[in-house]
Length: 95
Image 1 (cartoon, rainbow, N blue to C red):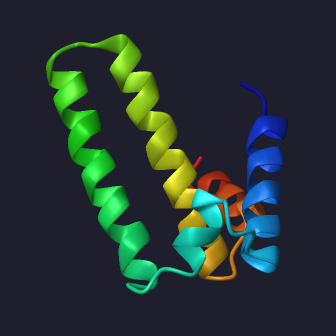
Image 2: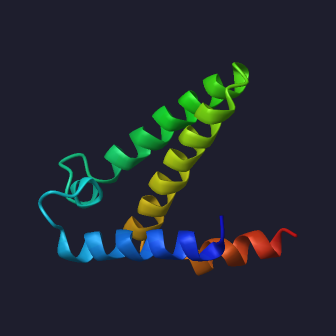
């Protein structure tokens, strides 16, 4: 996976946030009646699923659940008017 995959995904998330197409799961998260709690609940759910996959040493599920976490994390960043550069800067600071 390259950085451009994350950049492309984040660009799609930002587009869904702005345009809110009716048939988009991503847009539904921005427009959900629970607000950001919907994304926070998904992050909690996906984290639990990742832990269970890791416990079972299921590499395919680990990859799947990790992708779900990254996706929902990017949605949360967009909700908070943050972007990948905020995340990259924080990670670089920790190196």
